[in-house]
Length: 116
Image 1: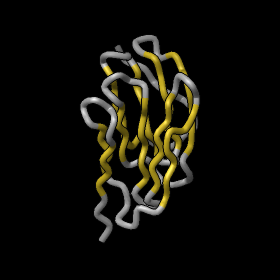
Image 2 (image 1 turned 45 degrees about the vertical axis):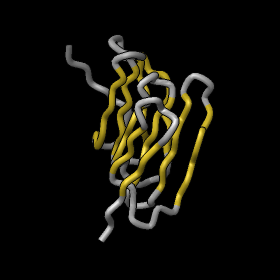
Image 3 (image 1 turned 180 degrees about the vertical axis):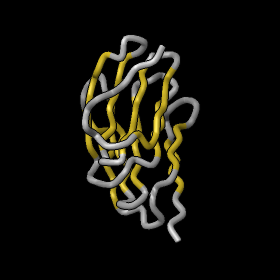
Image 4 (image 1 turned 120 degrees about the vertical axis):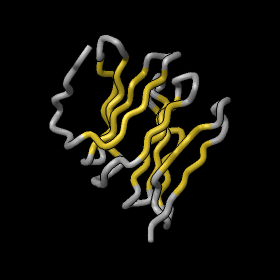
C-alpha cells in the first residue's frame, strides 16, 4: 500500500527497513529521522541529530538499533528505540558520513565519508 508522512520535516533523503522487526526509518533534509512500526505506519519516535540532511540510515538485523548519519556535520547517532536511549552520538567525522552499516550480528558499525 501507499502511505504519506506529513510531518513538516523536509524532503525524504534516506530510508531503511527491517523485515524481522517491521521497523521503518526515514531520514529527512531537516536532520530529523522518524521511526515507524509497519505495516500500520505507527509512529514510534521522531528525533533530530541537527539541522543537516540525513545522508545515511542503517538498522541492525534485529531491528533494535538505528543509526543515522549526516555528511555535512560529520555526525552519527545510534538510537535504541525500545529503551529510548542513544547508544552513540558522535560528531567530528571530518570526511563526512555518506554511508553507515551494521555488521550482520549488530556488534560493529562502519561509517564511510568522502568529503572533497
